[in-house]
Length: 82
Length: 186
Picture 1: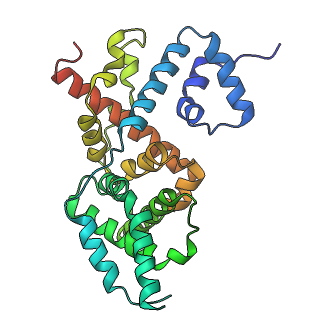
Picture 2 (picture 1 turned 90 degrees about the horizontal axis):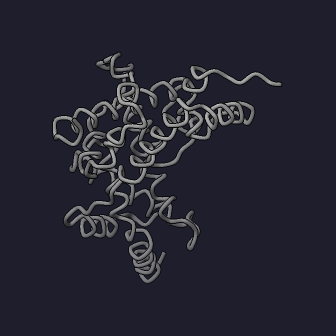
Picture 3 (picture 1 turned 60 degrees about the vertical axis):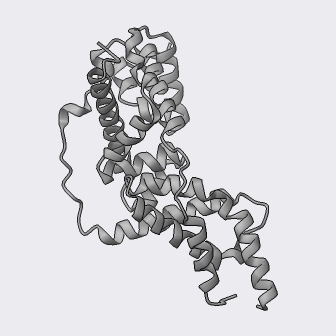
């Protein structure tokens, strides 16, 4: 039977794993460890939840007063380069 | 181009491209760490460039993505040209320790970040030094892969990984400290 990787080896790769940047081989190794490890599974889950929150909330749209009007005026001044 | 064609081009650009202005400005604010005048300049430059390249854009394809790419590259090229040598980052090595090592993930208070309002999350991102904030934005807010970030910033992939790691740990630490000060966690 193939040896399981250690907690340390899994944790060292937590972000690469969650970012989907590990090789297929290592993705599988980490996945197999985490799904049965009582310590790593909750840790991976909370790290994932944290990243999800940043991703969901970190980039709100924003309105700048008068910006659209300024841009439209700028476009009118653009030299015809087409 | 005749006047009629120009008017049509401008009208089309207004309808299609400027519809995404709020998203563009939102991204510009994060790239400039909340600097509103700089963010507006960045959006203006982006729109000018996009307008000049409008014939390259295929109407009906993903205009928003096309514009965001122009905005990102405009910002980063300027950032790279201004950056003379790597600015020494005030590096707190204890910030690398994950707060989740102090607080068991089973503890409900480990999910402190779910009870922090958006504005504080955004402020914490803005507070990161450029070298950490930019990889974080590109990865987590723009969905770029490590290799794309590395090419974009002109650094090795290994550097992207370590900066992302530190950015995330520092963000966790900031938000955790805030949560403790605000009484969200004990």
